[in-house]
Structures are given as C-alpha cells and as structure tokens.
Image (cartoon, rainbow, N blue to C red; front, side, top):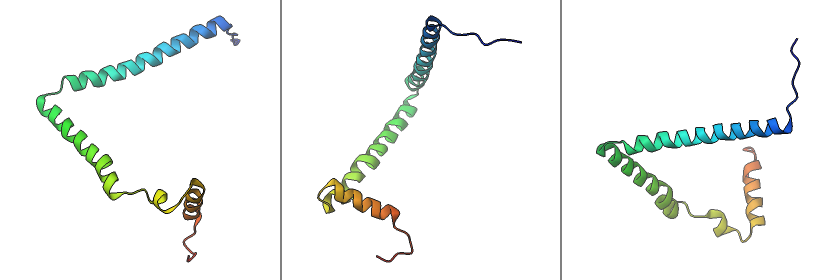
Length: 98
C-alpha cells in the first residue's frame, strides 16, 4: 500500500516555480500562435480584419455616444438615488402597477 509523501517547503517552491513556467509558457504559446497567424495573413485577410475592427469601433464607441445617453446620471443627482432606482427596477414584479 502506497503512503502519501510529505512535501518539504523547498520541494513546494520548486513545484510552484515549475507550475509558473508552464502557465507562462502556455500564455506565451497562445500569444505566439495568434501573432504568427496574424503576421502570415494575406493582404485580403488583413483588409478584412481592418474592416472588422472599424465596425467594432463604430458599434461600441460612436453608437454609444449618440444613441445611449447616460440615463442615470442625467436623471439622478447622486449615487444613492441611482442605486435606489436600479434596485427598484430590478426587484419590481410584473404584477405591480406603478
């Protein structure tokens, strides 16, 4: 029957360093994978990604500025009033007629 071995603090430190190397190598491997993929894209692929990034900028930056004004900041003076409004809206049941 096998017994469980105790790990000394030195062994634990070594294990933690190995784990950090593995996780950092995994992260760097993923970054390198995407970097190499984007670097080797054709001209057509690069143009498509530029169009995608421009569309995302328009959707998240421009449309938010013009079509989604800050309702809470406009209608309530301080954070307490805003939080009370949000809490009322979240906890309101459909049966109540306010």
